[in-house]
Amino acid sequence: MVKVVEINAKSIIGRSQVYEYTLNPYIGCAHACHYCYARFVKRFMGIKERWGSFVYVKVNALKLIEEEIEKKKKGEVWISGICDPYQPIERTYRLTRKCLEVLLSRGWDVYIQTKSPAILDDLDLLKSYKNVSVFFTITTAEDEIGKIFEPNAPPISKRIEALMILHEEGIKTNVMIAPVLLGSECLPEKLKDYVGSVIIDKLNYHYADWVYKRNGIEWAKSETFFKEKGMKLKEEFEKNGVRCSLLF
Ligand code: SF4
Image (cartoon, rainbow, N blue to C red; front, side):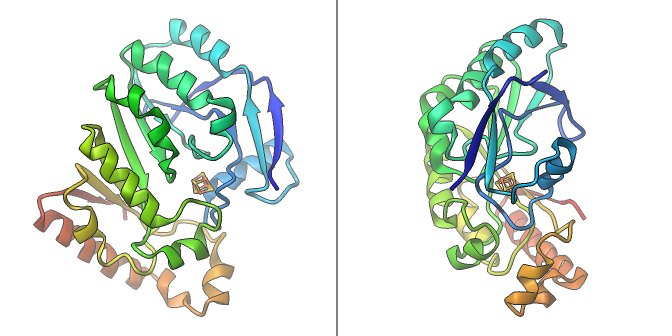
């Protein structure tokens, strides 16, 4: 059961080190990935609940974005840095869609990052604009491995199906393999025809150490594992003509 709290946020378009801006319609993420770095928001907001068990909904997001877009210099926006914009609550509030409508219609470049096929709800909108790219996070090719690390996120196989649909509909599609998990070897074969670029990263935080330990796979978070796996994936993607960056 996810606790939902409606809040009036002070702002909606924030600065980002990844792109110029970031936009998070929600605080918290019901996908509850064990390795998620975004749980740091609990400390800032004094939230005691378990990560993945709460979502704060910025119900004034549309009003804020309409005000802020008039004042800010046009730039690239990352949706979202610290939540999945298509986590289940989006189907109730549609805040991601409302913000996208404003940004895309004003010509801002938008980069959507998600693990959810629910992005297909907005296919009509995404198809209407050229200034949008989608990054699906696909950390392994195996549903069972995904389930261990990303317990409430949609299955990997469903993400790949959604990615294919977006690609076939002419949307710019990319993949983040971050962090690289076990069972990622055949991702180049599965994804090569459906992605423009791939970004690979290792595990940068220790939140999921207990998951590796409990499953007896601690070797899969070593520097050697990430280096070997990352290099091999990059080689395979590039062999198939897909741009690939290693972030470590
Ligand atoms: S989908 Fe992203 S933001 Fe949500 S819990 Fe997983 S890693 Fe964190």
